[in-house]
Length: 282
Image (tube, rainbow, N blue to C red):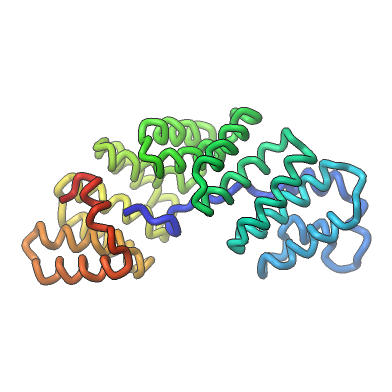
């Protein structure tokens, strides 16, 4: 089963340079870290400093609507990072009203809708962001994830291809395309993608999990178990890796170990057996 927490594609970064150019007047207001710096996320201790900095800029009633659009967008990013999606969406709404051609706010609002589970609204926002900026790799990657969730794998793969073409260093996309290719049966290409994902991020459980799934579909049980072991070392609570390892253990003739892993996975994700069955692993 594909786990959101381990594979989520992050939203676009704050428009730091533009904000600095547009509101240099604020930098001299305080001998400490300015509101501009805070709104740009320079204090990474938590989301609160960014919220405070952006709120101060918004309350200052800056004359330039682009300044306010960026401040609302950046505060929305902070709220999204805190899981306060309704507050984030309200801020993205304001940002888009102030600057209707601001593709990042559209993309970021789409991420907030996706995290809320409103996939149709998310898809609308990603479409709009791509229409405004056809070279926006993050928006293609995020739209691909919506297509994944809808089971529209051909469209997902097309968008992942485009995201990688535009920005090959967008690390998480390699794993996402690996997983999608594994589901559709393009297994050698899936292995190549997962190998690249692991090379780029060797400490991310999701890539080992995806490659383990690929090995399951290839019938290479030992390789699958090794990858699921790696995934579980990095994320011991990953139910799909535990179920996949149990599946592989059963196939290689270890019923006790296999059933133990499968039972443990079902306590976390009761429907996981049906998910694997949809992947062609009965």
